[in-house]
Amino acid sequence: MQKKLLNALPLVAIYIFWNAPFLLKGFTVQSGVLGEFILLEVGVLAFFTVAALYTGRLGRLYFALSLWSIIFGVTFGSVSEARFSPFFFVAFVIAIRFFLSNREKGDLSVGSASVALFFILLLLSTSLRFVHLNSVTPSSGYLFSIYDNTSHLGVPITYVYGLVFAIGQVSLTLSPITALLFPLIAYLTADNTFLIVRSFRSIGGSSITAAIVTAIACQCENTIGLISGTVSSLALSILPYFIFLAAGMLILTNFYLHRPRKLLVPRINRLSALLFFILTLAVEFAIVYTGAIYNLAVFGFNSFLSLFSGFLLGQVTGVKWRMPVHYVAFAFALQTVLFIPSLIRYALVSPPFFELYSVAGMAAGFIISLSFRNRDNLSRIGIFEFVFSMEAMIASVLLYLTLFSVSFFSGYSEIAVIDFSVFILLVSLPAMWFSNIYLLSVRAFGS
Image (cartoon, rainbow, N blue to C red):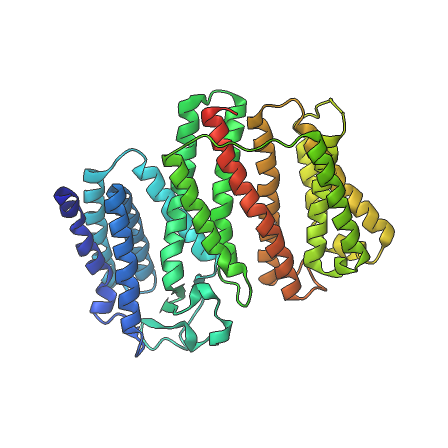
């Protein structure tokens, strides 16, 4: 333990050099936020330092700090504040020196991927923006509260007590939640991805099936990580809370990858599938009969039920022919078409087209169901996860584009689109995550 603490001491020097712009008055700090800034910085850096010490990942932390030192040095140099760049260069040298003495297998790949993913999350969430702020910056750099130019009611839960760092044309907004969860999610996404690749290789990854399953499992982790950035900045909705769901699922996956065990899932027989099929049709009928179908979120729920009923129909029928797996791509394409807003609007005003719409959803589910025939558990779970991960990505992309000025859902209110996307993500994310854990279990221990 004493050796670990000695290896961690250089971190203090790195953090001091990082604060050179503040210590040497390169930043003007708004009155009243200095205490918040100190608490935020000390809390976050202390958390990751303790976590690195506890898990034995100091090498990864040093490498990530070296990359961020370069980024900070280049940023200050590009906004005519090169006088601070040497401080970040010294921090880089210290970080690289102790990365080399503490490095372990995987530190380079995981560390670099973590920094890249963190940068992407900052961009997706609009925490990092490139705008000219001369009107609010009396000096080369300015640190102020997010509430200076945003109403308290307009700040999502993820940005409560946020601070804005503005220098030149670069603006970075961080809050206690994003400063803690974004780097944590970025690290877990990268670590889980490389753990999945290594674990599948160790079991025997020479087959095409193994390569496909590995890619699907990694896609799940990256989908969860990226969605957390997409939804974190949306105000006045439940969506910002998805960042906590994403972090929780990534933590559980990381825990499972380090302590794998066999998972058992009860099988559904044909009679059970038939009962579920009848119940699903009854719910669909009730949604249409009561008129609730005109709510965009309920329409999304009904579309999911159509897909699910088609899947159950395939399980109930005695068809023994196995559909080629590449037909799943056709089912996925059909799913994508069903997300087109203009078709949704037409389905809500034309009963014949609505029936066609529902049949198309059932057809997609039926194709997926038949593709399950005579396949091993590994392939079936891979198909299931692929479908749900693609659905989650479609929903999040449509949501992101719609709420950032690309109006795919013109004619619907912003709240209606949010509710629609919330439902799709609520269904897709947990289903995708659980199937991924089960996929890893089957791959490691068999069905």
